[in-house]
Length: 377
Image 1 (spheres, rainbow, N blue to C red):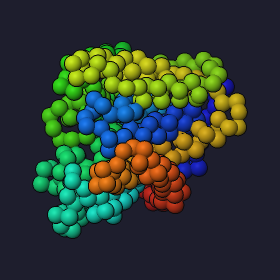
Image 2 (cartoon, one colour):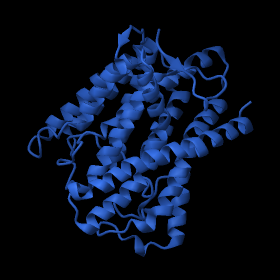
Image 3 (tube, one colour):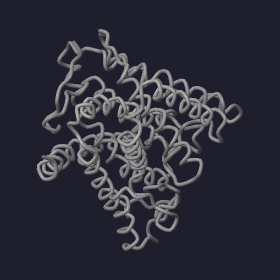
Image 4 (spheres, rainbow, N blue to C red):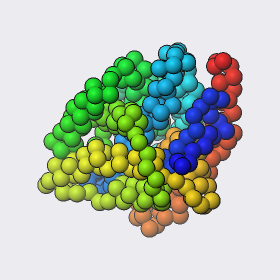
């Protein structure tokens, strides 16, 4: 029997969650954290350590499509949910952490000054405007990009993926859920072709795009969302579970390896890395989701690990980056090697996990419960 459970913070009528998939989402969030820590020592995306950590976002999009179809497809068929009700639920689930991430980023902003970005020249009024835009998930234009490195959300960079996540939710409710399975499969195939073309023949030779308001980032982010989110929807429709033991540990090992592997091909053969990214996202990640959704948890340790990682995964993703800005600035200002900065790196990991847990227990869950009582019958 596939092991699922319903978290205490879920809606009253929520289906049980796939516990192993929740745990794998937490593993992916930790790999994003590690990927961002090593940004302080990279000269480009080519020599980045934990080089493929950006692929965790594609895994998130795939998981999102899978669990949304699992949670809501039957409700649309039975007319037990409305467009308004669906959008309310998604906002209540996602947006509280968007807001707190922006606030934490604003609070820490003036402590993050370094040679790469001079925060001292940013007036408080502009910081407040940027905070409001980030909290409302409105991408900033050049005039409000207060850090100066081109991010959509300069106070909390990872918010960019929530921008695309919201687009995916809107596409689902207005269009994707209405497609017959064969038509959805055709869309997934075409989106996969587009994604592979972008990765293999694009200017970067990878899928690390979507965080800025450039033409390349908007195209890359859109293709990443369209393929992975739609593939998750399709996988949920055709999913037929089998019994797989050790699914969490197998999935975790594969996910960590995929995200940590060094760059392939270097500057001279960008296409090779693009091909690697395409294989991971188009073939391996759907297989990982299938394994995770089919797996069983037989031990208390694995169950507890999955539950903890699943609980903190989204808060960790949404609150860790202000610490990364701070760590980055410290490394640059002191001209540190990774070994010299290791205590700080450990502090970033521990502090981010602790803050994520505190935000979950004392902010996210209470706020979502209040909003549910206030706005959902």
